[in-house]
Image (cartoon, rainbow, N blue to C red; front, top):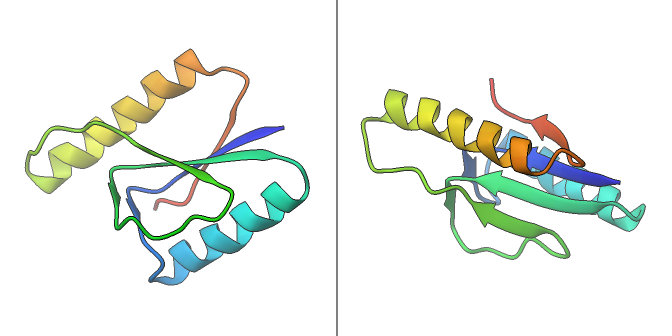
Length: 89
């Protein structure tokens, strides 16, 4: 199984981020290939999980969020075998 976890900002701080770390580790331990799709990442260790930063131009935040959603949609179209799970509101 291939699972991409989607989070605009990925860091080790915050409730959703800690949940994502726990979920990604459990999925990886169960044999899944896990990737995190994000715009920002502080470079902290993600364990066995690959982190892929989406290229989103520097724009006002509401527009950046829309561009991130578009980038994820385009990524998903190129990777139809991956299950996407978003931790965004």
